Image 1 (cartoon, rainbow, N blue to C red):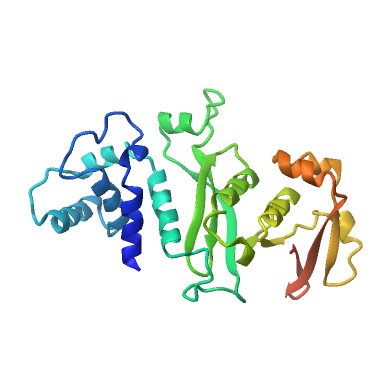
Image 2 (tube, rainbow, N blue to C red):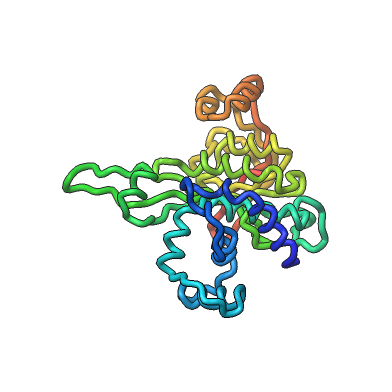
Length: 286
């Protein structure tokens, strides 16, 4: 299936100017062009940059003497919009017909299992980076750390990262997850996908978003979530009606969802309680 990956690269790189983020860069024809730099970062072996670069040049140009150092390469890399790598990944998933019921893909009872999660991480502490991610210094004696937030969706059985977003430290995980869901709708087969979320994602609007995609989800619940409705539950597996209150609707960011569900009184879901350890239970919405 490697030829399908090469095809995805060639398709995306037919219009390289789309992914050049600095004017007049890569405008002259060189032996080591924009496409070559992108392919180098896709296929390098993970050793030192210079060793990888020497091997790449030797394989591609048959020992032709090309003056290119890792410093030059790193500088050229800054002129490339990183979205090019995301587009190549999406094109590859389309090439392998990921959104079809292909027997080559691993599934759970016929469903793709897609896990969603996010985390904060440190980013390079440079002035330009801090400005890009909206990180300000509080005072001369207090300085916020240089961090960003990542949010992603991954097919856990086949190992495909379907979408990833890096946002600034002020962005919450839920708004980013809604963007993740929007970004993958033309890649997956929603009716054959189950989204899996940990605590912190059991928000009504997220449930609604997935339902409106004609898809399914499992989300772990914290004890404090939907307490009033859960008091009515009498078994470890039954339906539950979550009341759609004005307070809950106020948290909706999507105006279409808010308008549609303001006309409903409740959201009917399934709630399951399982014992994971002795005297320790987990509850989740389905």
